[in-house]
Length: 611
Ligand code: GLC
Image (cartoon, rainbow, N blue to C red):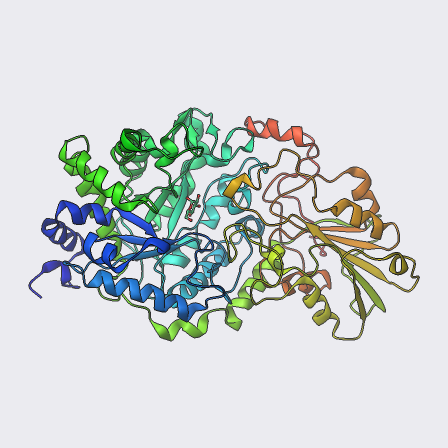
């Protein structure tokens, strides 16, 4: 116990300084390196003093691994780290962006855009706390969440990871940070990381900064704004996270006025670290340094090109690098840059101090291994009830009745026969969207949960006949004994990979309008849109249907939808984004002008009650 850094009662800053003073350059650079699970070996962890391991979306120990399998894997890595010369524990990170979404059986909450519709800060905090428990039960210490960008353009594929187009709503929802990490006590020093013990996780405000305003919604693109505007729109949510003790900040792949954030020392060092007083660590995006190379992704930089990427990124202020694969190469180049004096040793020390500070704040030295008593909480009833509540609160009712004096909802749960149709009525994977099980997300029964069809059957409790046909047949369409129809359509899941979700047209895909019109021509119809963002609604289509509901990407608990459409609860959600009438109109908004003549204004949302 003569090492001060091992003494849990010594102040964190004293422990940091003590440990730093004992470290070799090699160990310091190891701490700055984050590698992917697939290349993590006991040698790399134990001998190179690797600071962190991550699973990117879908990088699982094996297909359908449950929490205890994850905990076994992470603990195995951790034991190698503890056997290293100084025994510095590693941080295992994952994208738990709407629940612990990579893990089979975890509770999947609505994606952030849906939570933005609820505008409910307390709800976000509770979701953060539940997610923290499910993440820690799986052995993982760190989530790359929340995304606190302000999304101005739904053509951008990552819009659903953002809470709103409105800075004040995003600010409100940053309460999720104190759910994930715990609430710092009175007097906690601004800027310093805070994590309240073994039931909480290290959080990450991302992706710094301004990417919600990229030109024409083009992923990884350019943001053209004055500094004053950047500050006015985008800084406050980060500052709110920092005030709550957020431990880490991830940089965006985007550029600000032509310069990539990953090499932007003004924004990273002068603004984030100095002006906003952030004392946790700054992490790069996945292969974020490679992106500084002009030919990426056609080819990866090598030789002096890669060296220059490392040089500008580390000197700009990046503390931990999500390498993720060629870590030996990265470590050798960075070592040589320090030896040549191109990267000052003081810069390395600053990075390592910040990383160690987070590790001490998160009590990793005291509790490096999984607390298995948490395992029962993964996907537990209480968390699923919370997700169901979140679904209820996120729904936005946009039309109720062809004639306003005759509302169509709430639906009659004692109706004789209900037709349920559409690509999204019985597809759990579609309901959950991207970043579920895999990065891109997928279709089908990918985890444990309740589809809309399951929920409807449960809500009518056997008294009503449910006819389910994804694409109703002519025979069904000709029946005269169907009371009404519920049609669920929307987008297939996507995430940033391969730019799979950027869209310049924003139409309802998968023949959504075709299915809607087929059904609505015959029966009174409620349409539920399950999608990452507002999509084009042609006037003829909207006119044809009786009610229209935006459900965003609700996750595993679709009973939240039936709770409201059958009238047990009222609607609470209000649009967190303006609903455009014509896609071209989004250009006005992207240029900072309020959209005139939207289809539904920002904040719109109907309710049953009159007030
Ligand atoms: C990429 C993504 C980021 C994610 C990280 C780890 O950098 O942009 O959102 O957290 O990969 O998967």
